Length: 153
Image 1 (spheres, rainbow, N blue to C red):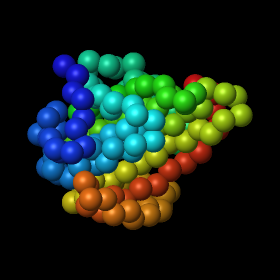
Image 2: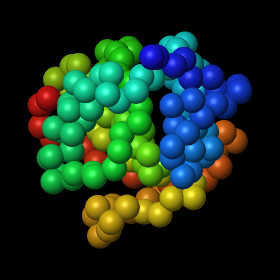
Image 3: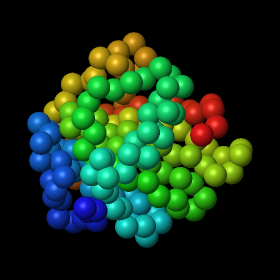
């Protein structure tokens, strides 16, 4: 069942099993607000098991850096806005991964990682990524990092 993310009334719908459900819901709402303000795009997620193709596409791109996450994916979304494909997965532990993939050959392509407030930095990131902090009215303190995609997917 799809869920239109509301960034005015933050809801934990679909994220209830997460130990950081409240801040993960805030992180998801933070992303929804960004896409609404920048593109007037409604941010709609679905349970990860309802859209396995999006999750597999993200996993394939992560192989570029030999990253595999054993965490339970809760929700995903995938959409194209302004010539760029975006895909997100929200994991039960509080990790959110997003892919920004320009449909133009020479466009920007990157993978972003965001950690919900209250979760530890996963061991898969140790020694590989540095995380910057960003304050959000919806999500508290978000820690984030990224890498540039080199392959074609």
